[in-house]
Length: 185
Image 1: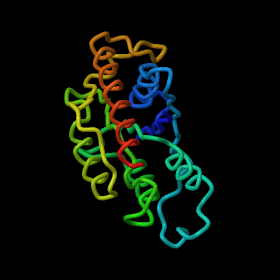
Image 2: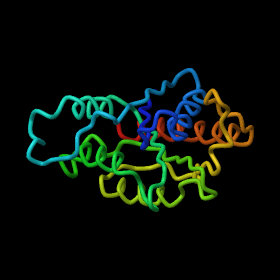
Image 3: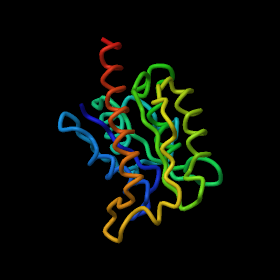
Image 4: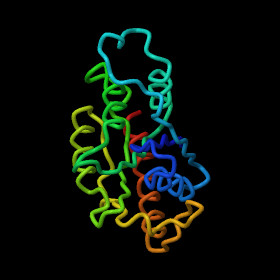
């Protein structure tokens, strides 16, 4: 199973990117997690959304197309998802109703220094994914609150309770992705 991980943060030491890296450590040996960097994705512009896409956009579309599932970690900016993530989803959502996102099993998580852990951003992300016909994993929210205390100075997830929850989340998520592959055949 190939999972594509997308962080909604461009920050070098982003807690959401660190969370995705920790998630990659919690998949079984039959699964792999590839992290995709959104830094080079240009702003969506319908004038350049033709048969030939910008190189970075085509790379994103190909990565999504070849993945069995997506794992998105988003920070919360002003009670919602960051523009960089929304922009990437806008590119990936074309053509409407027949995009690479349609039917792609997706897990949602967030990490935030706040006590809410990005829960409001997850709500908005679910709305966006619903509009793109992207099924998302229905599980207890993985919203890592006070994330600045969960990682050590080397970026390792050291909070044992969070590690245990992440292990359970990833086990359930990968089982769900596998079940979606069976039902889509």
